[in-house]
Length: 509
Image (cartoon, rainbow, N blue to C red):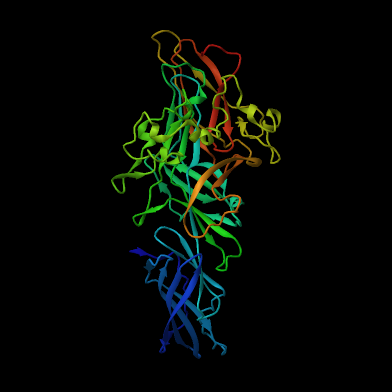
């Protein structure tokens, strides 16, 4: 059986010496749910008397309880939680008596099923039957969380730290018929095997959320020690979230006012799933003689430590051909995946397939000159990280190798942040258009967006919600005599950093 639970209960506090409840009345009520199904419940009317210092005061409370939602298929779910609504009489309040404040109407309560489909219950008048509207659960195929760009130096690496860092600032409301706000997905971080993923409402924008990555020191992108020192962006590492879910709850029971969205992971067998987040390089997703070369362990279903089963989605879950997507799919067949299935993912990284001499700022719509110190009117996917706020000098770090054959290999380890960047929200955004499915509830997309939706990731520099972004770097080369400066840029969408060898120095081939 599925159980319905209450997100929040609103109670009034009473301040008096004693209260004597009088005989109440109980009645059953039922209301059709907009979006499908019926909500059944009981309403108890209870006259109350507050014995105050200067006399008594009478009021009434109404208790709504025993909620049972019956969906269109006849499946029922219930809860024993109750909601108390107070109405205060017209008689004068004795001196020194503090009766409960009357409830404001319409009074709204958010009920939630274990699968997180929201149900809005609204009471228009004290004791009246309520009205209800069913929310919608939407399952997008995936969300690209971050890109760890490859570094110069064949013994170099970059990765996340234990500190919380912000990822993309994402809006989703533009893809819906009406949109209002985005809330934290239940306030609970989503734990994956390698990081903790949280979401928070973005300061100054009620229709956006910020993805926050923490406890992710295990995620890094290390160079191939047998390879060259030059940057190879086909080795850029993508972090892809494979089980995001959007819960859309109506603002009003009559469907007016749009929706409030929360981002979460799906419920499975009565509990919330861990986040299924995989790490995959650009090269394995690219076409190699017409096929991809993704490891089978990434394509297949992923292990869920909560259930002890391989029941979390793998990367093959986003591929068009699902006929081979089972746990024992063959590596030669790539679980039915083809290069075209990953074109949308790779398009998020414009540096893939560029040569080593190409500056990241070549992809700035507003041009390199404007993006050296961008303002809110600029479109700049990549910006230089400055040595000081407003200083105009770009940060750089040394990359070096051993000074002789057999000499020790230097290693430059440091933490890179954007704390010196002026905080600005820029005008451009990156868009991921992906397929989705409606799991529960009425469709709420525009008629022109019935099969695909978009995550819209805003460009911004500097701190988000008061938090600067940071990564851990280690620059090192095994080439004797290698010594050159490495310039530092920030990706304004994912808030990770791009490093590029300064031109004119060929000591680190």
